[in-house]
Amino acid sequence: MNDSSSAPGQPLPFMRNALEGVRRLAPYEPGMPIEELQRRLGVSDAVKLASNENPLGISPKVRVALERAATGGLERYPDGSGFRLKKKLAALHGIAPERITLGNGSNDILEFIARVFLGPGRAAMFSKHAFAVYPIATQAQGADAVVVPALPPDAAQPYGHDLAGFTRLLRPDVSVIFVANPNNPTGTWLAPAELERFLAQVRPHVIVVLDEAYWHYQEPSTRPDTRAWLERFPNLVVARTFSKIYGLASLRVGYALSHPAVADLMNRVRQPFNNNSLALLAGEVALDDEEFVKRSVALNAKERARLERELTALGLAVLPSQANFLAVGFGRDAAPVHQGLLERGVIVRPMKSYDLPQFLRVTVGTEAENTRFLNALKEVLAGAASAATGRA
Ligand SMILES: Cc1ncc(COP(=O)(O)O)c(C=O)c1O
Image 1 (cartoon, protein in one colour):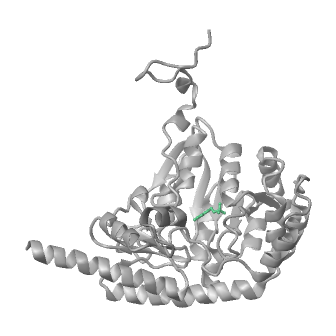
Image 2: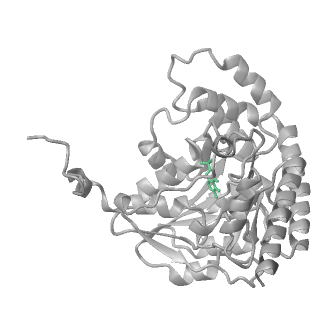
């Protein structure tokens, strides 16, 4: 008999067959979509500074290319090999196309690595307060997580990766190490010499994923020499994305640079058509528009510095950042501030799920968006201060 209904209050019979790691997973919490807040507030001018997107949108060249291509050839499967985009990326990085794997966002790359190298009896290592997908991808594979305590709040890189701690806690069952540089949600980063020393210490059978989603926003002097490191460390996988500086978050394009053998393994678990044709085209054209990248970098540098200055002047703790966002500490539970901002039509990201409940993460927006955020924040803080005085 196959009666799929079950008595109220009884667990559904198939639940016990769901993999344990998946059953215990807490799903990824995305930033609130702008439409949702607008629906809730009944307004049309909400501002979203919650998902580290590019406030300038997409390159005008990409827009033109997409408009031209939008309705042509959609009945055909895309080029599953990503030949043209890989060729361009290979030229950009000065490496062979065989070292490149395309992902549906760099999130896809992180999952390929987990599927190829993690499973029961294995472990992944990553820092506390690091990008949320590392624990999710690890647990979904039934692997263990070795979570390295972060640097202390008074360190030069507060709550950042402690590579000495990584080395100390390394266990024989660790087959993957995830390093986010700069890290999301803290914005902290690692000096190239320190990273290089770490890579030289890790045994060569352990895959090290260097997640560089925010690479473009870094000071050039703090960027690793990716090409040389790929030659020197065959166990290194560098993950990059088109979601941030290129503004293509919605289209989902990311890629990995690695040893060809690692790329070959990733390609075995990759969906044959994981990038759609518009995403592949947008990626290709985006690489041609250096001016858009420069403009995006310049806006971010200027506005990040302004936000940092103004938030510090409000007495808030701003973590040093080389990304397109800032983690802001309130010295108390930040949930009421988050709520107050939402009520004023400004969406930022709570950091409670990162075990930093006193912090909010704000994406660097346009000048107008940042001013709107700062004004809303001042109002919220003033309201909290007067409520406290009223109570006293
Ligand atoms: C550190 C880090 N890695 C990877 C990603 C995944 O980005 P995407 O899948 O859009 O490429 C993000 C997204 O925010 C991120 O912050």
